Image (cartoon, rainbow, N blue to C red):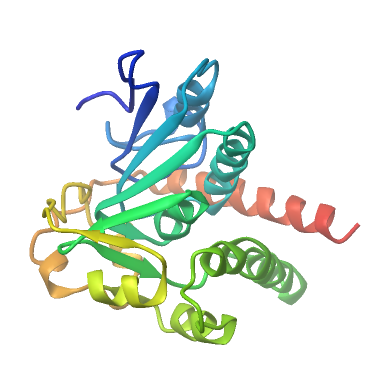
Length: 249
């Protein structure tokens, strides 16, 4: 399917959303690859969904922007509040933001070939010690108030926040058994292509414990103008600082 989303026939009353790429900051003009996904993609899919009763979210993503993911989560929560059932499928890889985004769903499914990667939120920082401390504070707020509650909402009985925090600190890659041991995720028998979302190495190179089977199949990174990249990072960090200031009011 080439489209990001597709309405099924009226009898099905369902909407399929394909998260098959990196979750990016900004809009359409910030996309470096046709598979990149932005906030507006989700908004377009979820606006005016009419009588839709079920959303099927198919995930094969290396993750990306925490800020964009927070906005997507808010939209999905509003849809759930209207009685829409959300089913998420980890088609191949659910890494970083794409690991806790599916946790908003009513039901989560994965395959024997699926991987889930959970880690502490990351960001760039510049400036003096005070500036860097603000960034640290924002990241801690994201972990404690956004990520942990989502993971715990789908955690198996007996799994503690301390366990999840320990796994986050280690950048943990979970196979089908590992994710189903920790979370209420149903493993399906069918297999999916694990690396359909790996269009370049740029984001995976920021992770520490990437499994060798992914490293072997990654394509060389796309060259990105350093000035543009720096501007995007500064824009996101300023947004993070603004959110922290609001949170501390």
